Image 1 (cartoon, one colour):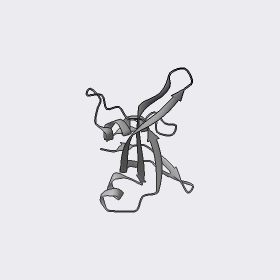
Image 2: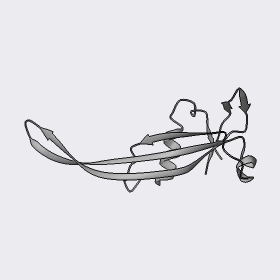
Image 3: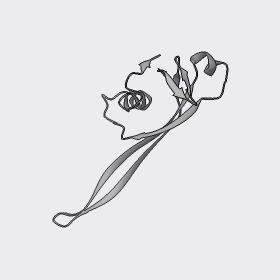
Image 4: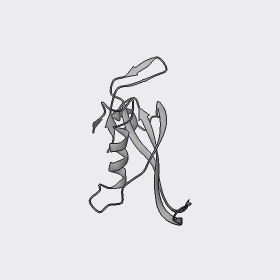
Amino acid sequence: MALKLTADKFGMTFSDGYHKIINLTYQSDDIERFDENTGSTWVKRLHAHFEIATYASKDARDAHAEPVYRSHFSFEPSIDSESPNIITQAYDYLKTQDGYKEAVDC
């Protein structure tokens, strides 16, 4: 899975830009929150961080070319049984971000 979207970098336009998740980490923490009225409570915090490598094209990526650039994003994933897997959630999140809203799955 990856996204296709024109990429601009170094004064060049890569009309077949290929954006692929190359690293994704997931963290689940229990955090103590304090409220003056109710006291201390524990809440679960879910966090995912991922790195996108942008290649000039899918062919460039398949030929093991270096990425044109890399970007990092973080979001709060869902662990609901009806939710898609975390990689799909990451791509869905990416498509909501400025610069990626016109991206299409490929």
